[in-house]
Length: 152
Image (cartoon, rainbow, N blue to C red; front, side, top):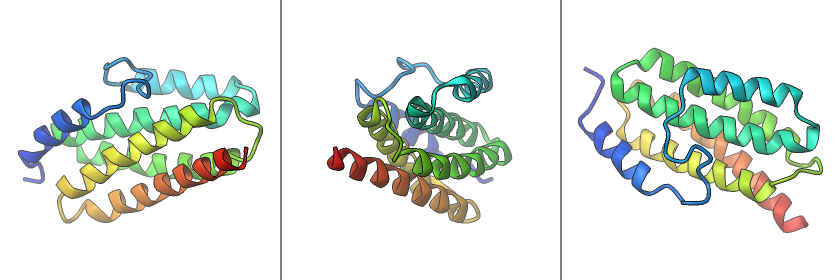
């Protein structure tokens, strides 16, 4: 069985460690409908708001992926991790645009990276390469956002 009892501990610890101002979900766990609604919102948003919205999407997808791993739905969690990698690349492309709420985007990316790091330590050997690649992509996007903040 690929699920460990440590997943329950990871989810409890990461929920408790969430920064108060960074969580746009107000403690609610995201679901597929909220992610789809956010994707639709991104497609209609002006370019300078997309970086933050992509960061919010990464954050929600990370939370949902954690939830799916914990319930044993590893395949769907892995699909989300692959999508997160693609979105992290989009964040890196959008971060140089004249972005609104760049600091909030950086906080969300850092929070998602924290969750992915916890997932990495609790994941099975077979799942670690994908989680590690996703963590690397999100961390790079976070670093790019931080560097853009220092340029301002």
